[in-house]
Image 1 (cartoon, rainbow, N blue to C red):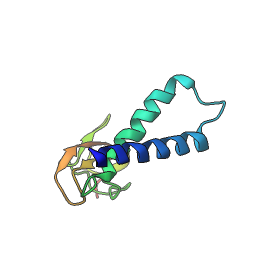
Image 2 (image 1 turned 180 degrees about the vertical axis):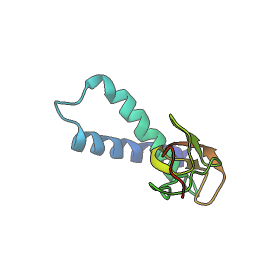
Image 3 (image 1 turned 45 degrees about the vertical axis):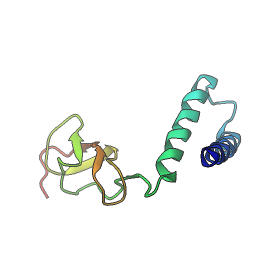
Image 4 (image 1 turned 45 degrees about the horizontal axis):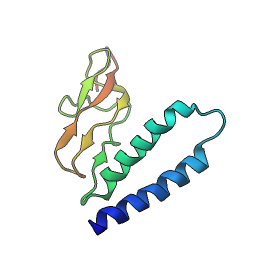
Length: 109
């Protein structure tokens, strides 16, 4: 219980610092609760041991891996761009959620 309280206090400090640094008059105030929830989820992903992680290794021109990604709007064998990265339970661990990638239609590796 004490650890949860400390974790929430730390998250509050991080959230306030982020919003103070990056929030300005151009930001839509309706988005603030959404941004706070995103900060909370990201924080919870990295404070667990081991931390959850995204796949940042898939690049343009790499082989499309259907085990890690769903095709976005087309089909093909070569990645044109990643729409959203794959989420792993931990580095090298099992896939929690497949990402989305746009294959470059007609190209092969």
